[in-house]
Amino acid sequence: MPELPEVETIARGLAKRVTGDVVESVWLGQKKEPLKSPAPEIAAALEHSRITAVRRMGKHIVFDLERNRTTQAAASRSRGRAGGRVRRIDSAPVQWIVHLGMTGRLQVSEPKAEVEKHTHAILHLASGRELRFVDPRRFGRLSVAAGFATSGIEPLEIDLERFVDLFRGRKTPIKSALLNQKLLRGVGNIYADESLFRAGIRPRRRASTITWEQFARLLPAIQEVLREAIALGGSSISDYVDADGEEGFFQLQHRVYGREGEPCRVCKTPIKRVVIAGRSSHYCPRCQK
Ligand SMILES: [Zn+2]
Image (cartoon, rainbow, N blue to C red; front, side, top):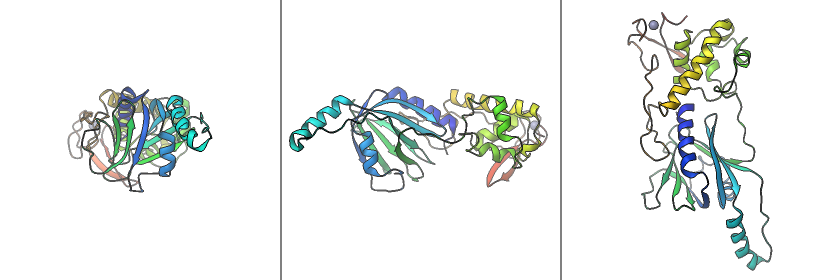
C-alpha cells in the first residue's frame, strides 16, 4: 500500500513530466473496478484538457484540468459544421483523481512501449507520450470531480494545538487513531510505527492517556519521518515504480517496522510485534512507554 511519502514522490515526479501537457484522447479498459466515475464522464473530463498541476491530497493524486480552448474550439468547429451548433466550452475546474490502491502505478510511456497486462487507462498526450494506469490487483480508483476534497488534516500542515485536539479524549489506541484517515490523512502503518518509536510512545496506549508533552514529541516525530521518507523518494517495500517506470524507492532505515525479534537500535531490547485493529504494530518495550 503506497503511503503518503510514496504518493507525494509519485505526484512530484508526474508534475515534472506532464504539467502543461494536453490530453488528446483517452482509452479506458473493460474492467469496472478501477473506474469510480462512469467511463464517459472520465473521458469527457480528460479529453482536450490541459493538465495545469499534479499534486497529492491525502493518498490521492490529483490532476487539475483546464479545458484546452484551442483543441476544444477545433473539435467544436469540425462538429459544428455537421451539427450547426458550437459546443459550449466548459471552464469549470475539473480534476482527475487517482488512488493507487495496493498495486496501482502511473507510467509516462512512449507510445511504442509495450502495453503491460492490467493496463486500465491510457491518456494520449499532445507531447506524443502516453500516461498509463496499470493495476494488477485493481484496488486503485480513477475518478473525476470538481473541487475534490478529502477528509482529515494534512499531517505536514497541522499545528500542535489542533493535533492535540484531534486525539485528546479518544479511547482508542494511539496507533489506531493515527491510522484513522478522518483525523489525519495519509499516515499509514509503517510511518505510524516509526513515529511512535521516535516519540517513545507504545502503539497500544490509549490516546486519552497521552500527555501534552508526549503529543509535543509525537507531532514532530510524524513530520520528521514523513519528510525523511519523501526526501528518500518514499520507502515502500513493495513493487512500486515512480512516474518514469523506474524503481524509485529507497528503503528508509526502519527502526521498528518489520523488525520483530531484532535488537532495538537504541537499547538492544528485541522489538515486539502486536496486532492492533488488524494491523501489525512494532515497538520497543523498553524505549516506548
Ligand atoms: Zn529500545
